[in-house]
Image (tube, rainbow, N blue to C red; front, side):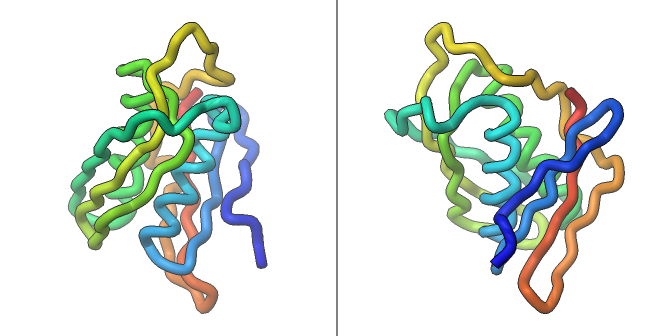
Length: 137
């Protein structure tokens, strides 16, 4: 089986190619990729949970908005995330739970400025779902 996500090289950005058997698993794996870029999840405890909610007119924009909510949680609220579980998802809305803890002096690997629409793709294949999304760093 292929890895749930891989990092993609880009001159000014960094990308994630995520895979999943379902849209929920796809979004969880994309979130895992973003988390691995921003911080070291192995050093984050699952002390608390936070709700992540995103809406958009289509699945591609939903992935961008969903990941941007995660960026805000990490950078804007100073919260370290170990993992994300998608509780509900449709073509235009997602509700998830982020597990982690408040940041207490730990440094981030990279600061993600934004999730972009550059070369954005979300598609269903014979093996499930795949997405490519780039992050402005």
